[in-house]
Structure formats: C-alpha cells, structure tokens
Amino acid sequence: MSKRVAVVSALVEGNSLRSTCRMTGVAMNTVLKLLAELGGACAQFHNEHVRNIPARRIEVDEIWQFVGAKQKNVTAEQMTHGWGDCWVWTGIDPQTKLIASWFVGSRDALSAEWFMGDLWDRLANRVQLTSDGHHVYLIAVEKTFGNAVDYAMLAKHYGQPREGAARYSPARLLSTSKEVIRGTPDPMHISTSIVERNNLTMRMGMRRFTRLTNGFSKKVENHAHAVAIHFVHYNFARIHKTLRVTPAMEAGYADHVWSLEEVIGLLDRRSAVAA
Image 1: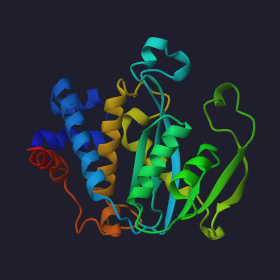
Image 2 (image 1 turned 45 degrees about the horizontal axis):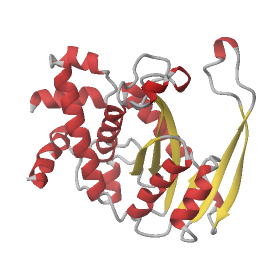
Image 3 (image 1 turned 120 degrees about the vertical axis):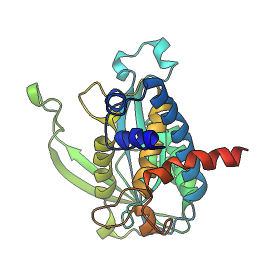
C-alpha cells in the first residue's frame, strides 16, 4: 500500500510517469498497470455514487490535449489507434466546486450529446446551465434537457492570433457577450469562470495536460484513466482553498477528507462488486 500511495501521490500532483518511477523505484509497467486499474475503479465509483446532484447552477467547458501527436501530424493508421486531438468535457457546480460530469472524446456534436446525457442523468433538479459559444451545445442541450433548463451562452470574442515568439500565447480578448438560449437564467450568474479555472487545475495536476512539453498521452485509454483518477482525487481527497473542505464534502457526498489509501481502496471495492 505504501508504494501505491507514493505512486498515486506523485501522479495526482502533476508528475510524469518516468519521474514517478524514478522517485518511487517502481517499474514503468507496474505504474501503468496501477494507472489503468485505479482509473477504471475511479470512473466506476463516480458513475455509481455521484448522482442526484442538488446543484442549482452548472458551468460546462471543453479542454484540449492530444494523444500521440497533434491532429495535423497524425497518419491515417495512427488515427485508428486513437491518436490526434482529444477533448475533455467537464461540468462543474460553481457553488460546491464539485465536478459533476466529464467525458473524454472529440469536440463534435456526438461527444456533446454523450456529455450532456451523462450530466442530465446526474442532476436532481432544474439548473441554470452556462456554456461557451461552441455551437454543438445548442443541439445537445435541446435534445437532452428540452425545456427543463435555464440555458445561456457566454461567447468570447478574440483578436487576431499573435505572431512570432508570442504565437503560443492566447489572442487578446476583445469582448464577451451573453445570450439567453432557453428559460430564464439569472444574468448575474451567466459565467464560465469557475469551469475555466478548473481547466488550469487540470493542466497543473496532470502532467499529460501540460502545454508545450513532451508530457502527452501515448494511449487514449491511459488518458481517460488519468482523468478519472484526477477528478475523484479532486472531488474527494483534495481540500479546496476557498471551501476549506473537499467539493464532495461541500456537496454532501462525503463527511471527511479522503486519504489516498481510501482512493486506492476503490480497487478492492471494485473487485468485491465484480466477485
């Protein structure tokens, strides 16, 4: 258990697989095996237990990374192995900071519908939903929620892409606009600031999400496993500085801060269920 804790502790704090191996003395194949097994257990636990969420507001967004290589560099054969651009869709309760739902896929209409369907299944009541201006949300929200949602878009308008040494920096934000799509959302709460701040937490907490480095996933399955571990750790085992408790405690899904031993204990729980 002590070795498992050392490995998982390193991974959730943003260390790469190889640096984790060097720090813990655990072989790469063993680390990868633990990543896959614990990732599956975390995804199963979230799917079964984080339901009937009593949220009043939900912010959604997508965050980009790639698997294997960026889309423009991927061959047709590599695409069959899941290489290329990969997006993680996230939905967060801005009051409790609980990650209610996530989905690993493409940035297309089908992924939007899968993500919205999962989010809808987890909510206990009508919510105010805010997204960015990505057009696929329009159909996905309509198909999933119908009229049972107060939905608004917050669109951001940027200037021309930067050139030269600044080409990797984001373009200058010129303005934002709010558009009510359905229902009666409160204009004061039409925002995506919390979910966008969570994007930074993801990039800082998962080495494979860091920008302009060689820290990227080689397999889409391992990418999804890392995301599952990150979110369960974030919800149940990481104290939020603003809340001073974990998001799961604030939302009523836990009565204490989980230790890493408890997170790893999901492996035994999964094995017991399977048996």
